Length: 115
Length: 110
Image (cartoon, rainbow over all chains, first blue to last red; front, side):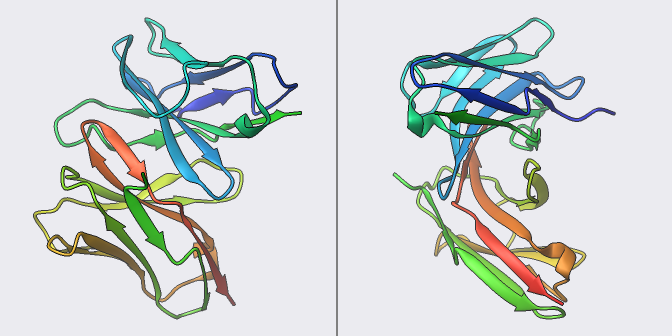
């Protein structure tokens, strides 16, 4: 069974540009989470999508947005890129069952570098 | 607001020794406490998790100790091996969301 896949692996942008990151969850998983992993800051919760709807949002500005498609894959968009957006962006999926909904399976991430 | 505080930031242990990583949380709504292991270039992978209705959970060489009244929990790695060298994250979970600590870089010397 394939795990969570993310693309691209690396992305280099310049300040002010837009970045689009993609995620395919494990087959059968309906929930997709996005986390930002910046150096020394651990994993910061960005967004949670389930069944195509945004369910929860972390403490990030509105230029961080995303969506979930009918096949449960997801896209994270970051507009007006700033230098401090440079980080590893991790996508995770989970199977929304009682007692299992917080069990996250992570992809390997997209390393975004803003120059 | 950092809701999960993790220590130490880094840890060096000799092969065969015991590695201990501690976490403290503030949010009493947390009802799920996992530990994730992350190797360089990879995403975090679930290692072991505990619910607050038990005080200890053991899986192989990995044990979580949980103290609800103190709002603290810890990961113990017995007989640490060089292959255990990785970054470890604790987290608290509620409402379908995990809040992570900042991570501990564990190095196990041969």
